[in-house]
Amino acid sequence: MWNGDSLLNKLYNEAVSQHQANAKRELRNERRPKLKAALREVIGQFESNLGHAPKRLERVQCDGFVRERVELSATPELTFAAYLLIPDHAEGPLPGVLALHGHGYGSREIVGLRKDGTADEEKPGIHQHFAVQLVKRGMVVIAPDVIGFGERRLLSDLVKDPDTSSSCYNLSTQLMMLGKTLTGLRVTEALKAYGYLASRPEVNAGRIGVMGFSGGALIGYMAAVLEARLQATVLMGFTNTVKDSIFAVHHCIDNYTPGLLVHAELPELIGLLAPRPLFLESGEQDPIFPVNGFRKAAAEIKAIYESEGAGHKLETDIFPGAHEISGRLAYDWLKNALTNLA
Ligand SMILES: [Zn+2]
Image (cartoon, rainbow, N blue to C red; front, top):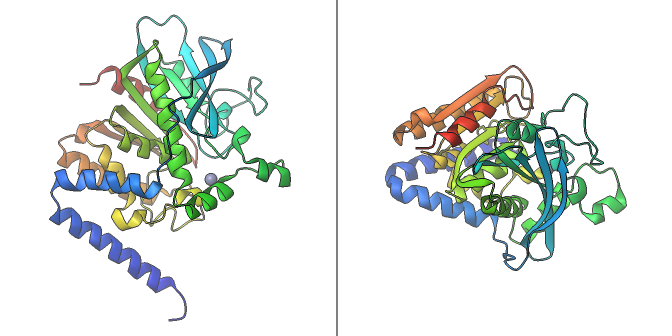
C-alpha cells in the first residue's frame, strides 16, 4: 500500500494493545506513578526561577470583587502576568481556583475584559468570562496569561504579522527540537500560578482546584496529575480519545506531545486524577473534540474512578452547544467540591 493510512492505524492499534497489556500486567500502584513519571518526562523540564519575587501590577475594585494583576516567573528569562480575582467581604480564607483559558487573546478573555484591557460589556464569547463566574460564587481565582496568546505572542511573530492569532507554531516547533514542549512550559507556569495562589492569605491552600477550557484543559489535567494538592478538576471542551479528536480533526500543533501515546491514551491519563473530584463538560456539537469521543473517554474514566472506589466523585455534562463553555452545572459543582472536601 502506497498510502500511510493502514500503517498509522496499525501503529495506533499496537500502542493501545500495549497499554492494555501493560495495565493488566502492572499493579495499579506501579502503573500510576510510572505513567505520571512518563508524562513529566515527555513534556520536558524547565529550570525553575526561585529568585523571582511576585510583583503587583494593578489593583482595581470591580462589581463584587477586586481584580489584581501580578507578575510572576516560573523559569529564567521569562515572566508572565496573571489576574487574581478576590471576592468582596470574604470571611476567612476561601477556596481557590486556577483558571486556564484556551486559544484566544489571553486571560483578559476570561476575566471580563476586552483585548485592550477595558471592561467587556458585550455578550461573552466561548470562554463565557468564566473566571468572573467563579469569583461571583465566592472563590479566589488566578488566571495566568498562557504563553503564545495576546501579549504573550512572540515578538518575532508580531513583527511579521501584528494580528497573528497565536505563537503556538513557533513556540511548539522550536521547543520540540530542544527536547521540550510548549505544553511542558505552559504546565510549569500554571503550577507557578497555583503556588502563588496557595500563598495568598485570602486563600485556603487546602481547597484549591483547577478549571480549564480546551487548550487550558490540556494544561489543567496535566497540572493536576503532577500536583496532587490540586483538589478538584473541571475539564471543558477537551476530554476525548486522541483517536477521535486530535487524530481525527485538524488541531493546533500544541496538542501534540512527542511519544505520549507510547504510554497511554488520554482517558487513562485523565484517570490518574482518581480519586480526586473531577467534572467533565462537552458541547454536543463540538466539532473539534467530538461528542462521540467524549462519551467513550468519559466511560473509560468512569471505569477507572469506579475501580478506585470513587465513581461518585466523577460527574459529566453534555450540553447543547459547540466548542464553548456552558458552566450550567460545572461552576456550582466546583464550589461544592472544594467546600465539601473529605
Ligand atoms: Zn495553539
